[in-house]
Length: 148
Image (cartoon, rainbow, N blue to C red; front, side, top):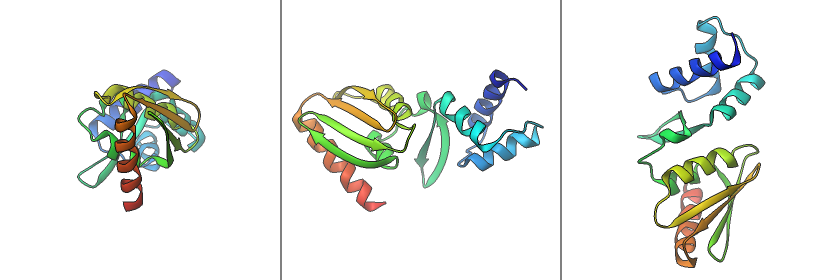
C-alpha cells in the first residue's frame, strides 16, 4: 500500500473510532493487511497532523483541524513539558516534533487573546494580544500542569 493510501486509511480509522495509542492504530492497520514499523507509523501520524485530545476522561487521536470547541489551555497543558512568559509571549516546551502540531491546533482555535504562533521542533511561541492575556494563560497552564 502506498503512503497516500495508508494516510487515507489512518484518517478514516481515527474519524470512525476513538483510538488513543499508536498500538491501537497499528493493530487496526494490520487487520487491514497493512504492516508498518512503529517508526513509520510515528512519522505518518506527525505528517497527518494528528494530535491527542481528552474529552470526558477519554484520550484519543484527532486531526489538528478537528479540535474545535475545546478548552485550548486545558488541551495544551496535557502536551507541555514547560512554560515561561516573556512580556506578551508564551514560550511552551513540548516533546520533540510536537510543537508544529500544537501550533496548528492553537491557530485553528485561537480567540481574541491569541494573535498567532511560531513553532520549532520542541518549542512553541504563542503571541498573545497583551501582557495580561499572556499572564492569565501562563498561570492557568502552570496550574493545570501541576494537577496532572
